[in-house]
Picture 1: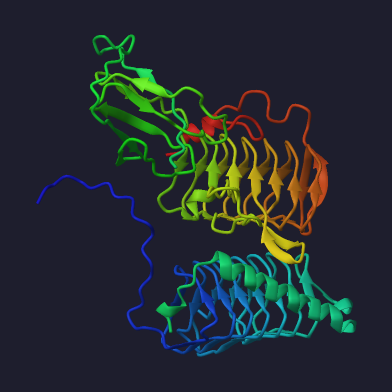
Picture 2: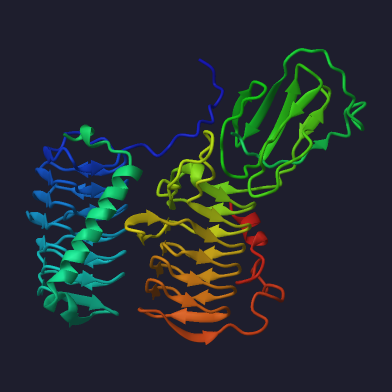
Length: 194
Length: 282
């Protein structure tokens, strides 16, 4: 045994949960190796969903469902940290950007939660909503479909999305293309959680 | 391919080291390069690849005195025409010229696609997504892939704790692609900001907890106040002060911004040369 200190350049240790999270991961989902999925409840990850490195999915307090074609970017946190039981359902085609904190009960299809936004407990976000960067949606609040939350708490309705279904479809097509690109760029370690 | 930038200084204490003499004994040489405490030893003709200018602390050359160090392409510079030669009695002490300081707790994906200028600092908790780079469409001639830089950061730039730097993505010719992002020299990026801009020019000061949405362009000598959210594709003209969400130009930096000495008690000045700040970190 030498006492020589080994100056090893260790990468940050991956979080290995004590209990493997019960998860149902669709085979076409893309989960990065450094994504963190923890918790005792089930985590369901839908078809073509993408989970970037260092995204945290916490199912300690309830089930987490991530819908088809949704993207959870790095450092996003999906899951309630404390308090009572609560499930979280994320719809299809939802974009959860970097650093967002989601404790909502549900997020409707096609919504976008932008960088560092936070959605409080038991909130319900409608379909095709958009929560701008750094915004907060309070606990228990309900956002109607097509709402935009912007500029330090103001709300408005996105009439373009509401009145033109082709724009919604265009958004879906854009989402599919993003996923196609990420399939090439992000090495998939979904097998770790299947 | 190792692309190291280094300068060779001869240790004046060694006898005969004023001028290296070349004696060819015909034996293969090994070059030991110490980088950040990690030692790699490379057989001739074979280099490992780190696409950043690292500070090479010491290099000992042993074996064949006629060492030919072919550095190939320098990061960000012209290709070196003449290979460097050294004498085995020489300990090539390299000046810590390119002193990038990267925290161990920084999270870097895709290190190969990230180019750091000299003397830049990446603090703890920073997430650099170099794995999201633009794939060239056509395969290049031969086997060489060509440079794929996702993020390039200039000299003396400081990226404070817990930032996220991610290349922007958009639809181009029917496909989504990531675009390379460029950050200039002497850029200070405050803690907790999310940077997804297309370009940030030099001498920009970005406050804490900002969000720079994809494809925004920030020109020289700007100051971005804390907690601003810059909407996508916004172009910020040089010399402006930007605040709010969504960001609006609220003023202009004065004429002498960045110049003049630092105030008493401070070592560096916003918008000016950040090298004193870089020196004082760690």
